Length: 204
Ligand code: SF4
Image (cartoon, rainbow, N blue to C red; front, side):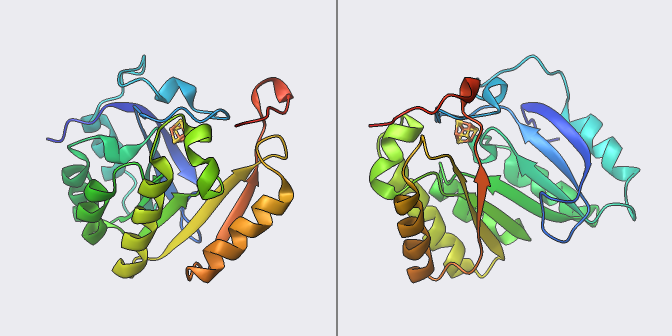
């Protein structure tokens, strides 16, 4: 049985996999440190939550015919070595499989692509601002590589950017949208960001 470190489960959502009724499995652990992260409890490699994979599978057995899909979110799901086995198990139950990722591990992501029905790829910021926002050198290159792999795969996807004027100016947001369009991205969602304490912060 796959050994996933899990941070929680949302039993039903209509917004995490477009057009599908889905459950969301939250994976524990993320190596990036985005300033606005609203899942900070999922950043450490190990968390307080005691949910185990067997409980998720048991839950899904009872949701066959009621749910369309299971979305793996986080945290950063591709951090976990057993994720491919978990995706295969979910597919074998008849569910579509969605993935939320920031593109942290492109090579691992490439190996997951055959199992995926849909991907929501976070685009954190204009490329020159990536390292400052994520706290990780080279993070923008990783996200761009992941986007290229995704586009070559033919797996349906959308890019998603969380934005607040305190993160970077609206003019840069517009330029980012134009950059993504020039790369062939057809669906880009911008979601509002609530900064910690509601106070805008300036990033380098
Ligand atoms: S990549 Fe996602 S989970 Fe990781 S720190 Fe950034 S917002 Fe949080």
